[in-house]
Image 1 (cartoon, rainbow, N blue to C red):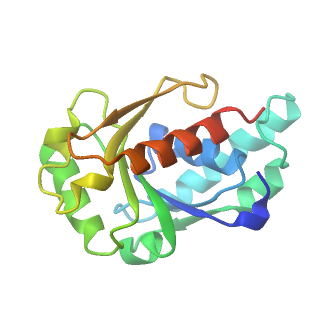
Image 2: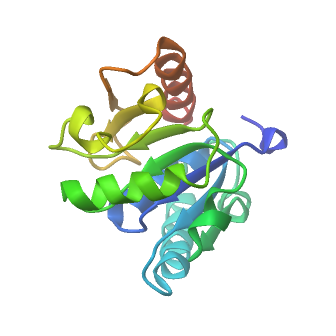
Length: 183
């Protein structure tokens, strides 16, 4: 994928899975906004990703057609949720596995994005009907759960909410196929 498309994905949470998703999306040429509500965490995540990308490039294991410098240029960090969500077509949530926290995060996200934005959770043990129970527009919600480690294992499990529409599944499948097939 060329960077000329400049499509934006927001990753919510900058821990191990959030950083991994950010690297996968950037390897596909997507602009990635990393958000964390803990001061300085998202910026530290970008610094950690920088080290990883440089090491991967040196070892000839970097994914995608872009250099580590080009991929890093696609990443930005945010402490303001509204700014992090601005312009995103896809949101990948990666906060810890606590149902109430995930529900709260998605309620807040929904206040800042249009109805066309796809909302995805990286949950590994919570069902979509529970995670998205408090979201108003559940037709755009699903779980996109990566196999660990996400950067190296090119496999993502997609689990729809009972109300998820086919177009959302197809768009997410397309996105995941695109970023998972970059070498």
